[in-house]
Length: 195
Image (tube, rainbow, N blue to C red):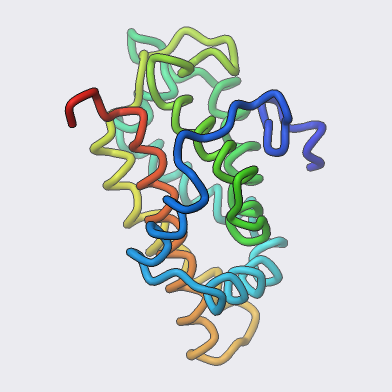
């Protein structure tokens, strides 16, 4: 699916405000998760492996969310009824997120979109992009906890193209570092003054 046909996908949109996290801050965060040039290369290799498996990855992730009432609640009405159109719209953007994670340079433009993703989990923008009436925010605890399933479920997909165990491990570790890095950025809007 092209970027133009993914509703709500705004990567590279010049109207997005700059992230309050600077590129210098990002460099420090990268150092904190041991993310370097070798990881960038491993993620590009991972995209070559994943690009034809995105829907399968999303099936696994959506199966996990759908099997947990407390997680699917974030895509449901306040009364608990799942909103199919919301789940579908987020799924398309989630697919683009996999691609972006593997292929985009981690620069100021990338940071601006990370901030957009972050605020879409909070009352500031949750539900606005897709014009739905759902719960007002995603609990930060589940964003952090989701690092594990979003990472652990990737190994079989990364192993699917016949790479050596060392190459698969490098791709897996790069993915893990990137997901951790992004979730760290997504927690920023949850912080209040004085913390």
